Structure formats: structure tokens, C-alpha cells
Image (cartoon, rainbow, N blue to C red; front, side):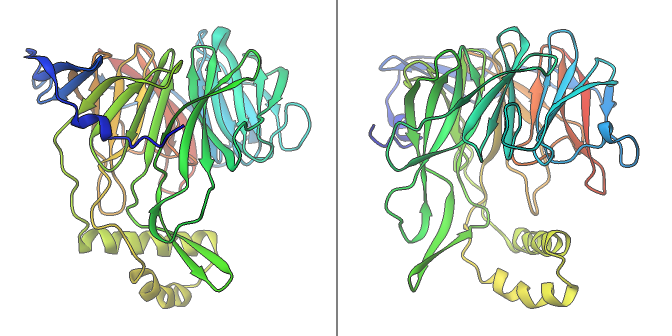
Length: 407
């Protein structure tokens, strides 16, 4: 499969353009629908909102261990209102009723059937069945809605030089997976390794390639016979979302999202907004240095003197000149696209932008403060009338919270 840059199709000329009352320009080019968002449908005071106080809260800093949560990699709300939580460190699935009362625990840490060594994600599919992805064992496992183990399936990578690195979500009867293409190692500031999206049939385990995208920026340097891989502060990279029969793909270097067919990998719709990337300033750099210091004190047990000694080295690292534009994508149960703009060191969170399935910009919805933590990409389940996610207190303790979505 040829490499396809994420934004190359945006240069296509449009025809049959027309301005919708929403302020979104809809056009068509070579069978690809294009939506250029100019202004939201919702007037000030209109639109949707997320309640400030949660309907359900699960978790505790001190108490029964079934309510102690750490390293949450997935949260889903089932059709009956029950909530299932996946923990990376424990390898467990835990079930709670619609009020947050503990019901059951399943799986755990290990190599046996129904166990995990490095669980990265949890998704629900047909009939509220549950599917998990284990990076260490390169396999998926299926459970019933009550946590009973059903089966496991090892992922056989059909392409030389690729390795499976994660899952995006369920689209139809397929689990959308990501693969890294570890070809020739480049040097300098590079988008490497490239990523490939593919659809894994949950019925028979066959894998179909969908598309290739550039990987995340990093700094690669050869030192003697070895290779040094360094994080690249304010790096750009691909982000994805899948739900129902829908798949969305974007790159954080620009405000542009494309809807992709999970059957063929072809682009069916494009969404774009004219919002240039903001420059990285000294405020962002100092905030990033403070974050590095805190992480090294917390996770590496560094003393303040060690952190102070490392700070000049961190400051001299290569870094991006502009901030990423986007942070994450989410698709809700009705097919609306929720776009989270970038936030990080020196940048405060902003409301999510919400787009209808046809790309029309509806407006923005603010999330409760703190509802954006967890291990890795923020776990978030957005339904018809609820938002379920992971909330952290000032000490970093994780809780699962369910909020009412008012429409």
C-alpha cells in the first residue's frame, strides 16, 4: 500500500459549493464531500452542555480495593446502564451497576486465558460484548457483559516489518487496529515509524489494510552502534476515533479531519477549518520543563538537586516550533464528531468542538474540569445523553464519572 499523507486530498478543488445557514460550506470533489467550517449552528446560550456534577462516581483514595482505580485504559457504559472499567496495571475488568456499586471483577494479570500482561484498551461491540487488546501478548480477548471469558485471538501481522501497537475502536464487525512500520531507521526530527490502520474481523480474525499515515514526531540520533530515540516536545502525530460504522482520522499539525470507510480505507468526507498552528513560546517551554521535573521526581524518585542538574539538558533538546492543533477525536453514539483541541504545558483545556455526521459545525461543549486523565489517550464514552470518562483529583487519584449530557 502506498504511503498517503493525511492532508494531501485537501488540495482538491470543489464544485457545487454552497453556503449552509450553519456557516459550514459543503462541496464535493471527486466523490469526496468537503465541509469547511466557518461558524457554528448554535447561537450563544444554545446548544448542548455537560452537567457540572456527576450522576455517578466510582473510585476512592482510601477504601475497599474494588473501588481503588489506577491506570484506567478504558470505560464503557452498557445498554442496561452498567459500567465496565479496564485497568492496565491490574489487567482487570471491573463491573459496576448504574449507580456505581461494584458487581464483579474479571481477568487479571498473567498469560492465561482471560488474563492480560499489558492491556491497552477496552471496547464494547454487538450485544454489549467486550473486547480488550493486550500489547504484550499481541492478542484480543472477548468477554460477556458480565465479565465471563469467551475467547482469545492472537493477532497475526500479515506484513513484514510491521508490529501491532494498539486499537482504535469497533466499527461494524471489525476492530480497528494500528500497526507501526519499522522499516529503515531515519535520523533527525522525523515522523517515524509510520502507522497503518487495519480492520480485524472479530468473526474470523482476518486483517484488511485500510490506510497509512505519518507517525508521531520524534528525534532520532545514531550514537556509535546504537540509536537514541528522544521525545520531541510539542510533537505532532496522528489521532483516530471509531464508533459504530464510522472511522475518523486526523493529524495534530492542522485542523483537518477525514471520515474513512472501514471497509475500503477510502476517504468519504473531509472537515477542515482555517486555524494555523500557534508558535511555541517561552511560557510553553517553561511549563514543559516544570512538567518534566515533576514527572522525574514522582516516577524516577529524583531529588530536587538531580532535577535542577537535568533542567539545562532538557532545555537544549530539539523541540517543535509550533504547538499541535488537536489533541483527540471522539465519535458519539449518534455519529457526531467531538474534536478536542490541543492542551498541554502552558495551554489550558478548551471546549470540545462538535460536528454533525455531515460535517456541519454545531458548536462547542465544555467538559468538566479534570475529566481528561487516565493512562494514555483520554478514555471517553459519549452516549445520547451522557458523558463517561476518567476524572483525577489534585493528587492524581483516578475516578470514573458519569455526567448528564443536556441537549
